[in-house]
Structures are given as C-alpha cells and as structure tokens.
Image (cartoon, rainbow, N blue to C red; front, side):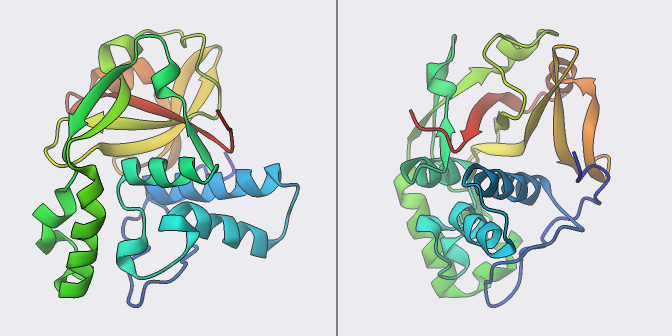
Length: 229
C-alpha cells in the first residue's frame, strides 16, 4: 500500500544493455508485483538490506535468477510462474482450487509482434525470445473461470496478498494484467498499477465488477509468494 499513488509508466525496464533496473517512482503492473514480491521474499528471509532485495528481484525477474540479456527476462507470466515455482520463490495454487479448469495455448505473442519490441530488432535477441517460447507450445495451465469469480464476497480460499494474473482471449498471450488481492469488509479488490487510472491504486470497484467490465479476460490464476506445496 506504500506504493499507492505511484505513477503508472510502461517500459521502465527497457534499455541496452539489459541490467537489473529498480524504479520505485514509476511502475507498470508487472514491475509493481515484482517489486513487492521481492520485498516479501526478503522479509520472509528475515533480511532487510538493499543488496538482499536486489538479489531477490533478480531471482524473480530472470530465468534461473540470473541476467543474461533481454531474452533471459521472464516476459510471459506463465514462464515467470514455472521458473520461479521450480526454484521455490512462488507457488501457483490455482490447480488446487475448487472449480479449476485448464486452458491450452501456444504462447508466442512477442515473436509474432516483433516490431512492437525495440530490443528484438537484434536478430540474436529475437532468436533468444523464440527459443524461450518453444517450451510454451500448446502450454496447459490452470485458471479459474471469470464467471466463477464474479461474486461479491471472496471465495473462502482467497487470501489478502494473493497475486492474481488475468488470463486472456488474445492469441499468443497467456496473461494481460497482474495485481494483488486486497480485502475490504471481506470483498476482494485489486491493488494494481492501472494504466487507465495512471497510477498504483486500490481499485474502488470490487474484483467482481472489475471482471464484469473486462470482456477480454477469460479468468484468473492465483499465486502465493515463497510457499511450497
């Protein structure tokens, strides 16, 4: 909540060469969740130094926790979840939730839209992104359908602080937006960096209403930080 009001700015990680960028003054939905998650991991480790935070941010943001160019960044949320779950940083709880369904998609939006990503003008970088997408052909992942979440009161399994990632109809893409669940009188709301509102905000509309207004959303995945199965 300390980041509430922070201006929404996209593309703050873009630069050449790729480096571990920290920007606490401007955030998009992904950098907001990554920053908070790195802080949570640091606190769970009973550490409090800036160096420990930087270490955890790199662990979360990059494949196998190490920077190795633009393609090593975990650009897709599915890739972010798989890589970090394997290393114990995150836990995707979606498949254990009542009513969980599965979606199968080939995730290759970035290579399909090469011109939208300046870094991919470089052929080596482009090939690196394509290689990272290979493992996500016909990728099967769990989600909770949008209709199942459009109830005002929070389902019993939702916890304040859960990361919520919204799945999408867009071809080649798994998730379009990500945020953190907050409860107000037992009703879930979305704490997120909102491009529409231009800042980090605890959305005034309940999560159910947010979903009702977003026809491109198919459902959501739920992730917890630093929890093992």
